Length: 260
Ligand SMILES: Nc1ncnc2c1ncn2[C@@H]1O[C@H](COP(=O)(O)OP(=O)(O)OP(=O)(O)O)[C@@H](O)[C@H]1O
Ligand SMILES: [Mg+2]
Image (cartoon, rainbow, N blue to C red; front, top):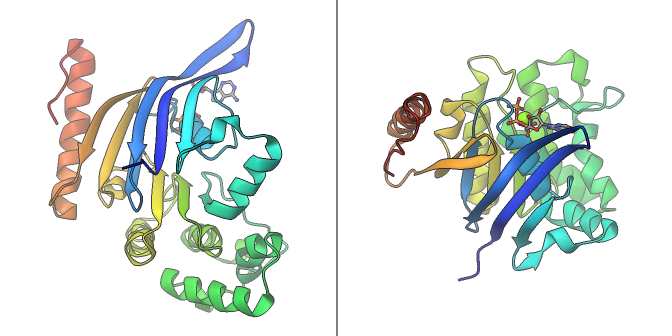
């Protein structure tokens, strides 16, 4: 069966002559349709770089990325823009809501860009706000609500166009202790209910424990991969913590690779 997303031998160098960083070093993996995948790794390991290339926000230095069989690295800017507007939903690392609009208006934005009818926009936005528990703060401005509510608003905006594929960069970053659970529960519900494929970058094992597969990135390479299988969420969290410990001890002892 054709992979939904296929990343093949992708490399990425940042910078120009004099100061070049190899951010991604020949990475290959596949994502199945309906998958809920986490990419974990320390700061600077290349997580955002990898996500941005899959999102066509950034270009690859070498290699190929296929979305439903089509090589997105070969698209021109217009095709990439169409791909982003049509198929993708983004939740960015930095909070990116417009302060001059209410939360509800912020959520309408992608639909306005897609020129959808207003009744449909309102209905869909409110449905998503209900799922994410932010309906009651829809008429507030971003600076009037908590970081967690702003983050869920970013998620709602990513979801309002019914994207086939959601890319999230540290969606639980800067949330208080209560909120990651709500947000991850909502993403899981979306993945479950609408079979939306989700690729999420996180350094938080708790957030990753909701996913059905975790890729560990180290210095631009995938060092380990963990499948959830039939594990309960709490068991998956423990497995992720154990994997992180093994990876750390592998690094300090210079070479042992933990078994899957
Ligand atoms: N625009 C850029 N120009 C030069 N170097 C860059 C650029 N963007 C990222 N890098 C470098 O590439 C490497 C990977 O960065 P990236 O942002 O992908 O890491 P990350 O895993 O997302 O980190 P974090 O967890 O801190 O967000 C780092 O060494 C970083 O300094
Ligand atoms: Mg990052």
